[in-house]
Length: 147
Image 1 (tube, rainbow, N blue to C red):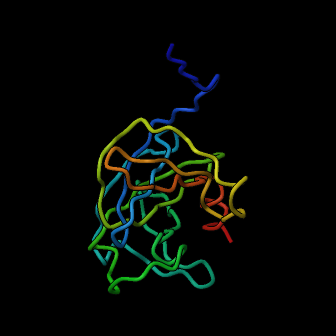
Image 2: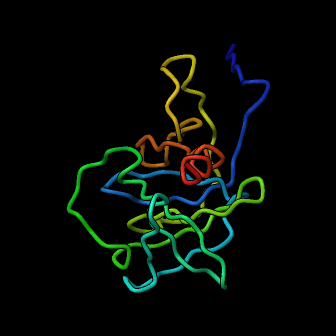
C-alpha cells in the first residue's frame, strides 16, 4: 500500500526571473508592463525623489533592487542593467536589475509563518535547480518608489 498526500490548494504564479548581484528574484508577470535598456543620459536625478527615467513622455521613478535589499556588488550605472517597468494601482515604477533570466511558473511558498515580514518580498519559491528565489511584492516596491 502506498499513500500519497497532495496539498488541497497550490498557489502558482507566472513570473519573470531577474538577476541582481548573483541572486534570483521573481517578479509577478501581472505587474510587468515592459523591459528596456536606457542610457546614462536617460536617467535623471530629481531633488528629493531620487532617480527617474522618461518612458513615452512620462517620468517613472527608478527602484534599484541592489539598494533596496542591500546586496553586495560593484557599483554600476543604469546603462549596465535592464529596467523592468512595473505597474500597481495605476502607478508605474522602473525596477533596475542586472539581467532578465526567463519566464517561469512557480509555486509560492509563504515565508511569514517561518520568518519576519520583509518589505518588498511577498514569498519565496524553489527553482528547478534547487535554489531559492524570493518573490517580489510589487505594490510595496511601488510604494517605496513614491516616498
